[in-house]
Image (cartoon, rainbow, N blue to C red; front, side):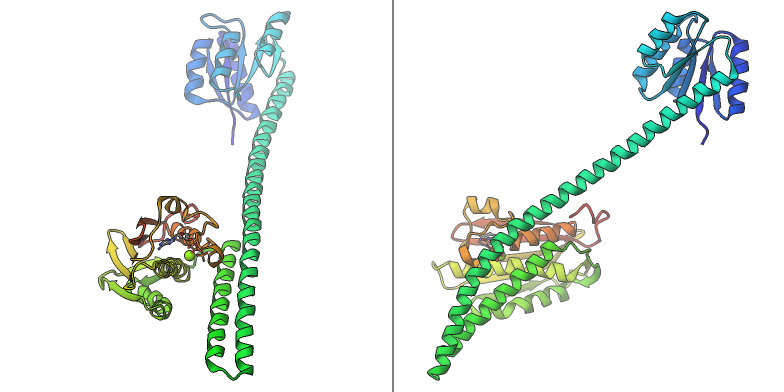
Length: 380
Ligand SMILES: Nc1ncnc2c1ncn2[C@@H]1O[C@H](COP(=O)(O)OP(=O)(O)OP(=O)(O)O)[C@@H](O)[C@H]1O
Ligand SMILES: [Mg+2]
């Protein structure tokens, strides 16, 4: 692409000769007869180089130089001085002119000066490019560092969690073995339940870690919301029923289709349903526990609701539920469930809202847009 150069001189002959010469060299040429005319042309055309005489009526070259640098510091201004105007030449350089040449203008010298200008522009562009690359690099490195330190933190807390689970697993195995020795089927069953429960918890923990550690792209699929919700319900139903909790489904058959990564959204909803089960089990104030799982359309969204009449939350807990590793469950919880559920829903361009009353229960609402978010990178 041709660079534009603005020639400023009050003598028409000089302007003409320079215009022809510079056009020959390969520039797009603009001309102006004084500083003021040059400045307004400059504001319109944004030439990358200005070549100006110093002594001109209305606005002289030095003033023009100052004003151009105010407008755009990156514009290169080449000064043309009369023979012996050394003080003006110095003044120009002090005001950030790239160079000066003296009248009468020698074409070879002009070309050398312009080459210098071009090199300066090129190196500035390169510098800018490097700076941008460097910034990207620094940003990526910082992201990596955050990710690693979160991962490190997670590994610490998980190792701790697994240690606790292994102790319980040992307990379960001991029960099974001594039950077998005594041929006590009930004790074997009891021990076996513990083993199964612990294995299930470890499986969930590992899945969570894998999800968090490996940032894989979503695999979008068009899915029927009710069929999908039904599958989610079937996954968790045995666990809920086993605990003697009433599990009610309230599916709007008109909900229709939406685009999601089914595996991810299922794990988000199961995490929230898991919590509802825990909340019911923790509440000893009543025995008629109930979890309601519903799905319905809401404008451009599919809306899932999970309602439990379990223990509820106080405001201190409520504030922290989406925080990584926040758990009120001691050894029974890792604090990954809602952090991950929230992350998944956000990746889908959706959101989770929560209402909860201590002693009464909690109500989670999950909004998921029907369509794939435009910027699914950003949603993460
Ligand atoms: N339905 C709910 N009722 C009451 N408290 C809840 C409910 N859901 C979440 N919480 C609170 O939010 C905390 C964080 O939940 P989250 O699912 O992230 O972790 P967790 O269940 O403790 O552990 P994990 O899911 O990793 O096994 C819980 O420990 C609990 O205090
Ligand atoms: Mg949980």
